[in-house]
Image (cartoon, rainbow, N blue to C red; front, side):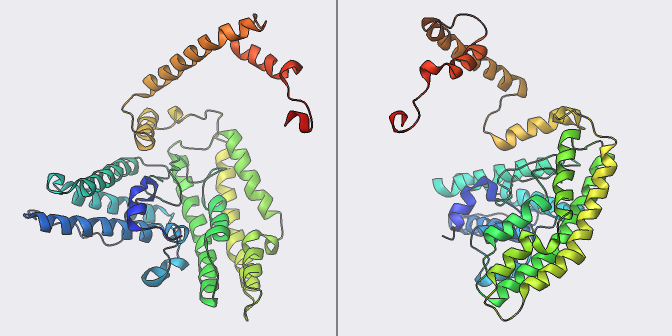
Length: 362
């Protein structure tokens, strides 16, 4: 079911900003309550448009790539540095507009909407201040997946776009199939865009840890070792268009061979070059401004104002409390030696506490 503007705005993962943001001129003022309400409505509508224009995949995933927005069906997010810089600039411009709104003159629902959107955009703008990483805070389709890397075993165009096209790009007409091919063509461009960013991040010392780099390269090389005509991105389109006059599968195969394979090979080359410098240090503490980046991620992903150390201590305290409650129970059933964790492992292997096989244990 297509989601409404209200639903979209209530999801912090859905908030993005791009396109022509018409920032207020200095000295602009909204003097009356009706003017303020109308301005706020327009501003929130602009925010939705910015979401969808900046991240066209979000429009498809939300069922909003139709009607006046059908042009979005043939587009993908611009993953190049220039594209990301534009999104960052538009986020900051929209923040300025949101900060001009005096929410005391709005009803409770409207004030809450503005406050939520403003907070998310402000958090996002801070994230874009880091000279590396993917900011997913405002991307409905990325579902909060902030990452210090543009490419990893679970992030990047290679991981995301084929599955997106399979699950979210509906094909009912020849125009839909044409849009799919246009997205395949754009997919190659986005691979190159994030490859260049990955190279730039590497120059700053932001490189995947060696064990993840090995896994990421394995995924890419595994795909390249196969005949591209057998890739799901090709066979999926062929299957969905088998009753159409044009042979869209053949067109997809050409794009896969001539565009996607070279782009993936270029990405592999950059990652292989970085492998010689990769270490096993997986935490963001090893990255430039790592502590600050970690703290920002806490703010971006939670509502707490606690520091990383305070959160860690809270976890230790909670674990101690739970183990304190488990201790007398374990003692009462004869598990008296070893750590709580070791005793729980032994308990899981104790046949006295196993359910019987078959119907009796169901």
